[in-house]
Image (tube, rainbow, N blue to C red):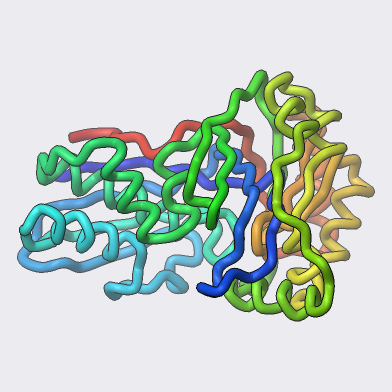
Length: 299
């Protein structure tokens, strides 16, 4: 028997970042929107824990116990006093190291899959608690839809979304380390008074109404200057998408993927085609949101 779980990518439509805390983390007001690019995580009983991966950029995915999918299996097994003896296979379609929470999605997917395979009986609350231990973005990968993440981003409040938003994502030709981007954020902010992060009421209202123009006027990412400082070429990608007619252009999370909000599917297709021929990015994908969170496909 095996269990397969599908998990979505995310885009941060707002990422407000506070000053570094004593523990090294940052308080966030992180508005997540799940979008329809998915990884599929399949778990099968095995003699010991092992991971395999296929798909786009699979060679960049760690296949040891540092992988969030492996850590999720180990965490649940430890809580139940069992051995994490499973083969975890990840079919990648979410960009790797792209600021779209692909690794976090795999962690949430593996956790839900193992809970189902082992009939471990973990409640939604327990699963979310394990997700929060694994990483700041992992709980949202389980929940999907749209949510406001506070604390490190792991404390979620589900948000209402009144329509479908159409996105284009441009993948860069190299990755960006999330810790490095936060370190650059801290460096750029030295000596400055960094305000407490709060969610934009205008942005939350735009999501609730399903209004792409209002959302475009409200999106923001406090990590974008740091990402651009480390990867200046991303400015060319952002400019190409704006020129192509995107309503908004921003770095997705810690980058280096750039995200472009379009008015409708036709506009998204036009922006995507322009970006593909711009020479400023490696690949381009389109997707819409909100998308559902981690979903068991069989088992």
